Length: 466
Image 1 (cartoon, rainbow, N blue to C red):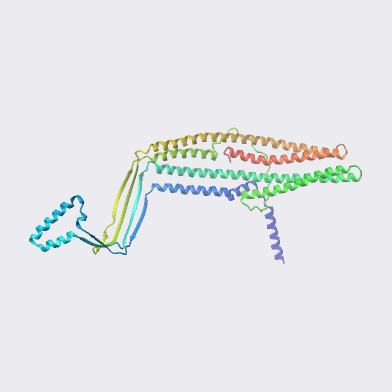
Image 2: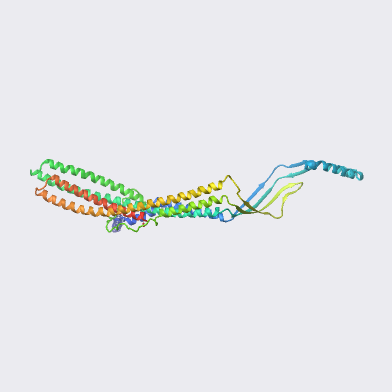
């Protein structure tokens, strides 16, 4: 029994600890960087580009291939022809005259020998069979000079790899900003819910006081109805705030890699001590700036690649093969004792193709110039974005300070109005207005705090400090 009690106590303690776990902003960012699908996708793209770079690097090395063939002809063949058919037509007549003269001379001494020679010269019969013929060999091809094509392509693959890494950094920064936005959205929804509950509590107390005053004949029923209307609005605001919390929590879970149904709790973040924008900030450290630089270098390598298509190309190929098999006249047709080896040097020099080379190179150069123009335009836009984020950040700092002051002033006004209402110096409408002003001031403060957190991280991203 005691053991059961101990186990149950431990389970309850662990359950309480699990429920009491609160996620901070930094922990949410780390979870997002580990679990976010966009981060994983960018990492996979980087690995893809790495493999592409290695594939282009392989073009520097020899290409070694092995090949083999086997031929088996199940039929026997006979080669029948006249000897004169093997002689070219321009000398066939002279050969026939020479062979007849030779046979006549031999016939004078040995007629039988002359007859046998005549039969041989008249017809050739040869039996052959193409069976069990096999061959195998190895070929090595090595490019010597390809007009700079291999180097340009490899340099482009390296630039692509660097761009993939910068895109990975850019994706990482986007994920951080989105996590800040999701976290601050949940903060704002939670604070709005707290304000709605406080506002409802004030109205509940006010309704009780007005109803008591009505019982004693000090207030009219219409005043009770006025408070009830405000209370109904407060109830609706509570429901809206609760729904906003649910949606904001699901959004945060999506960004940090948790299940959408997880009931995560977050720590409160005070937007205090946030520094204003810096006058010496620059966009040169942003991943987008590096990507633009790499795009320009990539376009420059494309010019070299286009030019390489019309430059001389030199390559070397060495092959070694062995062939065996086949029968001709009872003997082996292919029966080499050593492999057959040969070397080939290939030189290709383009001469003229309708000025295609000039047009392609000019097109590549124009693409490079266009990339430079686009780079300048994008850098200016990034500077404008940075200045805009700086202005928004500075305005958010001022807005939060004013919102804090407004909350203090609205709270003081509400307390004075309540005291004046209790002694009959203010009407119910004036007190309800004071409560509404206090609620609006608290809501603006919650919005300003959450927005300042987001504006700060957006400014850090805009000036490359994230």
